[in-house]
Length: 217
Image (tube, rainbow, N blue to C red):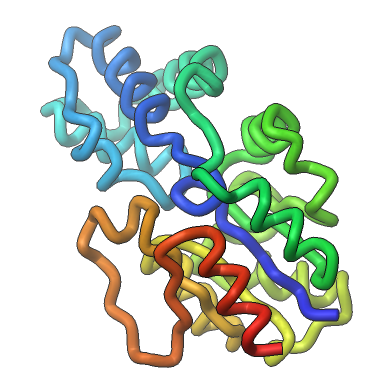
C-alpha cells in the first residue's frame, strides 16, 4: 500500500480569508493598515512565525516585534473556522484515496489548529499521522517530516506521494525523493511561483489528484 502525504493550507483547505483577516487584525493592534488578501496569501506557506514577520515588514513595522506572533496565534485561534472550508471535492477525494492508500498530513501550520481543522471537517479519520510545523522535525522544505512519515509506515520513496500546492512542497518532495502531485487550485499557483521540471503530476481539481495517483499504481 502506498503512502500519500497531503499539505494542508492551499491543498486540503482554502484558508486564505481567515489567514488574511487574522493577519490584518493583528496589524491593527499596532495601528497599521490592512493588507490585501492576495498579498497575505503570498506570505503563507512557511509557518505562522514567517507569516507574521512578513506581514509586519510589509506594514512598515519591526519584523522582530516580540508580541506579534502570540497576538496573531490568539486571533487566528478565534477566527480559524469563520470562512475556511475544504476545497470542493476534497472530502470525496480523500475518502476515495484512503480506501487503497495510507494517508498522512505534513504541514508547516502548528499541530493544534491543524487538528482542529481536520476534526471540524471530519477529515481526521482518513489520516493515520499528522505532523505540524511545531513538531520535533524541521519544517518543510526540510524532508525530515516526510522521512519520519515514510519510516513510520515502512514506505519507500517510489511508493510515496506528496500532494501540495507550493514550491515549498515541490522542494520537499525533491529532497525526499518521492513522487509529487502539484494541485493547481491552491495558493502556489496564484503566487506564480511554481517551477516544475516535468516529473511532477499536476491536478486542476481534487478529483484529478485521485486520477494522477491511481494512474501510477
